[in-house]
Image (cartoon, rainbow, N blue to C red; front, side, top):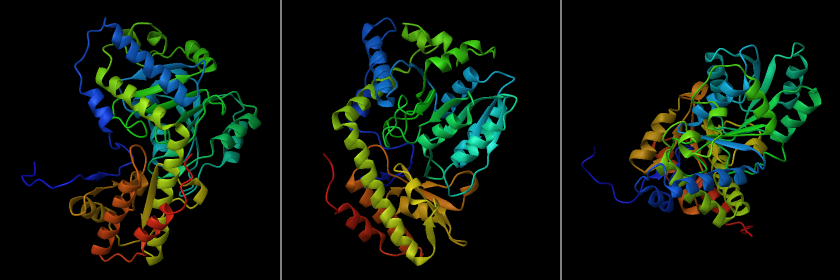
Length: 398
């Protein structure tokens, strides 16, 4: 541990984990309850109903797991995909491919729609792949809304329309881990059959709580699935008792924090939450647009409309070391950004701008990263000024 205390606070601009609000930390700083305490049941119920409301998922079942998002992925795979079935995974970057690999590791077949780096999912390619499934092997389409590695957000409505146009009965399973509570999402209006989320991003909690919402169609498919499963099994978790809902002891402090987080989001109002994320993302995008004038860095996402409100992935030119940028920004300028993942390792860095963020934190992040870029002699335009200008536009908050 460093012996020298650095004054002030290091700004966390990873796209997960994200900063935890004081109210959430305070809620988690409580003793556990015995499992028969009715107050624990009330907390679990509040979390279930709050998540269903946030997802706009009336009539769906909500299953929570003491797990990260990969655990929630596994719950979807184990419950929905029989051994003789396959899933269609449209490529959108590192996390769609990771989900595909995890599915294959569990013995299921994966049909991939190839990833075009820097671009969102092509809905027509999804429709074509489903039409080509003459044997009816594909049980579900696994769609990542926002790929945290590439910073690309996908048009879910267009993908839903492609599934419908194909006439294929495959379920639509959506990963909103990086987009929930940052961008609008309605499970019922889309509609999606299953939605997967996790705690450590827009919900402003530590990692460790994954969840799945499933509609009646998904529940019927799961009940008919002969795959052996225990911890992930939705059937075992349909119980009034918290101990059985969690297949063991509930993660009480995470649930206490989630209850507080959902209350904060409700108090702010989701329209304002979404507008805040769009505004802060706009400031980061304005900064990167200015930085790219030097020719050393650029947006990884080539389509402006597909650039995420959660995270911006910044590609670097040959000979520029993104990890050196991150290290200097963190250790000298107290701004912690994220590195490139998968095929983008060593080729990009990422600025997270979701969760408990505001204008001050975003300007601090942009200023610290620009200072690192200039210290390293990397040619850039005036991104900090561009961000200030973007945030100086009239406030559209209601």
